[in-house]
Image (cartoon, rainbow, N blue to C red; front, side, top):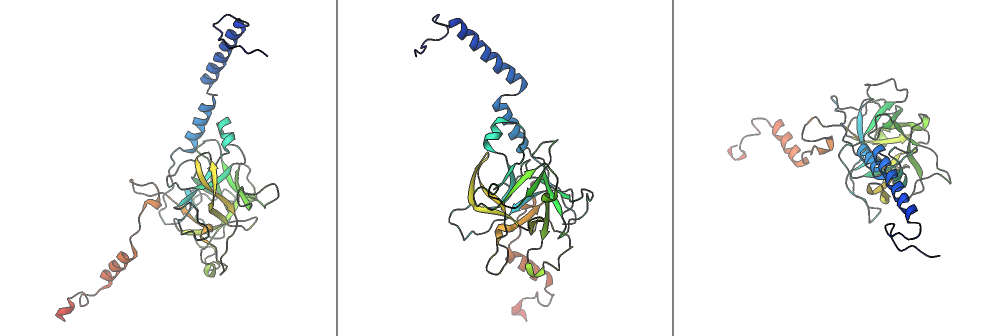
Length: 309
């Protein structure tokens, strides 16, 4: 079959048809651009919503309340079970499918999740704490209480819920093949989670106590009794780069204690203007705190020069 090596300006063959075809292609492009339907425009809108800066809630009593906007952060710890892992504090983020994200400016359902080393609250990592009955806004969240974790993703008319269900042959996490964690827009019992105290020996005693903000807790799924875990050694190639997998599985050590993979912090906003989250507050070194405490508790006789006694 002969191939036309000339452009439509060279009047050979179906030159008139080629000119009209180029005009139709340009007209279709301009029409999609005016309506905002180009792939690059959809892609840009989705990124703007997911990366839109968000304001976290500021706690006044040190506890987490229903209706607060928080970040779920897996605090940094030395990983000893893998040679290659992602260090630092990792926040739970919504992660749309990379192919579907290029074709649409809206969030697909169900939507995936991952953990990324970001400390800035944006649309993809800011969650809203909701009570199970949605009628306890402003009340303190307590250990053992059912609650939901919702996220808008920067959109004003969308609300997705952190969910999970039992693992099946066709439905599991991508890398570890454990129980999958995802986001859905259907409210159900699969959206319910519970916070538990970190020390298993004091867990029953703390049942019903308020959940402190910016402190390590365990987050367990009510339906399957599996803990939310961040797998720092299992990497994912996402729409925003290299991140790690998040699944629902309780990792126990030889003492039947949850490993740091299951440790999470409900991070709130910082009242200071120069920082956005409480993660930016640098704690004092322990040695400095000990010296300050010693100075405060020292009596005048003890504060005298030892050589003068």
